[in-house]
Length: 451
Image 1 (tube, rainbow, N blue to C red):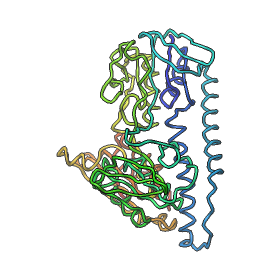
Image 2 (image 1 turned 180 degrees about the vertical axis):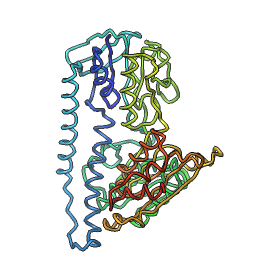
Image 3 (image 1 turned 90 degrees about the horizontal axis):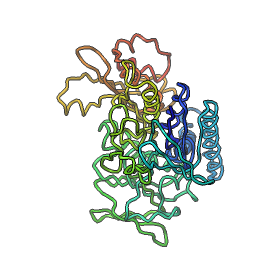
Image 4 (image 1 turned 90 degrees about the vertical axis):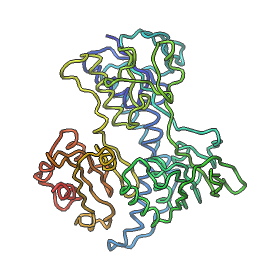
């Protein structure tokens, strides 16, 4: 069997290595970076810079722990070198894994010319590949509206900020979703003045209002300016910097503007029409629960599929596509369960959630039990001089099965794994309570909330 994968991000990588282990002949075609542009040119650099900002924030609060320390000086060139090293190491490691599995990696731009034929344009000319199965995993890119003329200098897309050419004096962040609030945290941690344009009445409009409230309170304490109920409609360059214009007539002046208003799928030029693959709204490829398109041997995964835009979800899809390609639909075949996928926001404090949300349960009229424990009651949080946030667990009152939960606080992105396992495995709160967790740790709050 010949399996051709277009796109070497998390979905394509996982599908390639997993299918190769199962004995399939795999060709992976990638035009940019092995590991995925959205991942290695956006996600990883942003988290590396957030880690730098976190170190500076730690220095600013360390006096509360009995240590007198000067605030560290920031070196943008060293940050740039550090990010390049991390990305390079990760790409090299992924390439080595693909080589060890005998996956053929082709550097070039691919398109389908019919439902079983893929052509790759490479530096050495065109190559043609016949395929029994095809996976489309070309990812996404930041959305740039027509009213924003990016220049990489004052008006920035996300990839222009890892790091920016100069540290902004006052950055206006447009977009209050996950990416937007992460950039607010990042730039404020680095000492920049920050204004956030919030189109709704709360940041993170898709998240639990209690969660959003904690983050808004922290932003307020840190001096972040929130412009609520305003939708940006224009960005103008000025001799001093930029002016961001909003639909209600308000305007914000700053030294820089950063766009963080979502993404669009990389579906152009794939030959979807030639192959007969159906598309949905917004340029996403329509798939079923097995990640199949309307043509059973052509699959789509990752951001292109229009499901949760998370690397973890893309990786899961890739593995399960490989299983389906090799084994077909059997009793043991799994399909992605998007409702049990955890997600995290790397602000300060961190935010993470999984499974059923409290607001959704109430909207559906579903009976649930909600328990919440603040980190202010955690010995470890007090030891670390950071007691912000809480653990919230949502359960079925009749069975005690864990349906979901939210965590706001330090290391929430790590702690949510416990609840993710519980949701996926349909564990009861008693299973968490009866697990003896290390003392003193933040994880103890999970057992207390479960109890």
